[in-house]
Image (tube, rainbow, N blue to C red):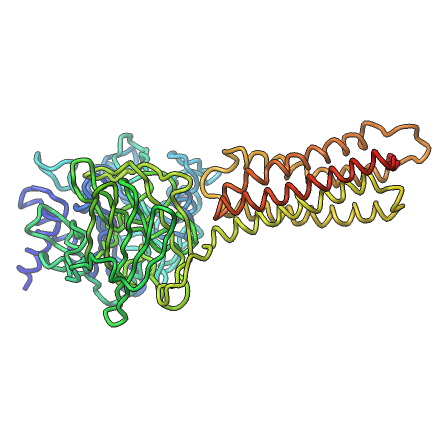
Length: 613
């Protein structure tokens, strides 16, 4: 039995990591990793997603946890407990990390493993401020790690080689700079890279790091199930949760390179449901309540890539997307991705994130300028990177396509961004075909547009005209109307602005509508303040209105109104339906313009006076 386990561990190190390391070195590595109860692939190589980059091994000892990590690096490995579920750009900070490095430094002539607290981005620790990557012992904490070891296995044929970090830590937090390992699903972070300086932990880059959700207390050994429904893709051996593949040059067996081999129904005319997503993209789907699967068919009058999938937040970021294309050389690419950000290098294969390709079967074809993509998957998968297709109510969906530009034949799969009008989040009820309703993101956009339209196309113009032309007719009532309506409008404007800040993805204030909107928001916030000052400083005996605050208040009022009216049609292009937005804008503009013309003509005919205040 021991011989068999040793052989399995040898294969794990040599084949999973694609190394040709000498037998003696493998024996040492297998001895370090074989003692752990559980194993999980954390990430595959960015350039070769079918090969493993780093694995996690662990054993729950009750009061303590034993950890082991094996990574393709000749520098350092870091792993630790995250104190939150923050975004990729911020989650590494303020966290409890164990770092093992292979090179010597002034503190220890041997490879070191120590307890760190990551404060801020600086590589070198600033002890006084507890900033940078600091050892707990340097900032008032303690190193509670035991059984620490860092080893390296390689030969001339292996580059960079395999580093193995092992250590034991307490389950509970030991000091203010530690976080407890909790019972249940918890976020953990990891990173690895080279080590060039004696005391400097080099930056890991944008790919050699990530966060994963794991239940380290689970007693089950969950072996990955590939897209064909077979454990370890039917070609490898599952050892403690990791697939070991002795036959395919180091591939993680949970990766299904073909995107699944189940047959899919290519006759889209037989699909039960159909919906036009836009003028060029049509969606077809079937579902099977017995098998708990959904079959998606997409037909696009385009030749570029197509993306489609559940979007928990109603926006592109966070979408569990199947993305497919036919490369220039004819290679068909379809895979299971998670979109983490807007950048091309932030679209990750699930397998790169420690998950699985959950496409059960697929078909992709480009013919006569039309791209057809069909895929099949389970409604709900066990992959933490996936989101479910619900048959109980609406599922938020994000779709997008590139009309003409395809993707590469081989990884990394960096694809060109879609056009502004070739993407959209929507809601679809997959159980009855109802859909087309606005997704959460578009609902927020619509609410923002309606609120700003009410303010700048109705409320503010009316109060401005009253202040300009009806003071004598209304008496003091004009001021109360002006003050109350504008005060309410300012609060509504604040709510609409907050909505915009929430739903805008990526850069803020990077186009005309956003920039003008910011200017209008600032002017609209300052304007009531100037109005209050003008009221407090008003002198009924003055001969003319002063520049400050009265004339500045007047100028800002009309300037903000003009910009607000101009910005409404600009914003209409960001509505869920730009055509409907433009129609609504034209109607509002006609009403406001007519209102202005009527008052101007009436003023010329009747010579209604208007006072300074």
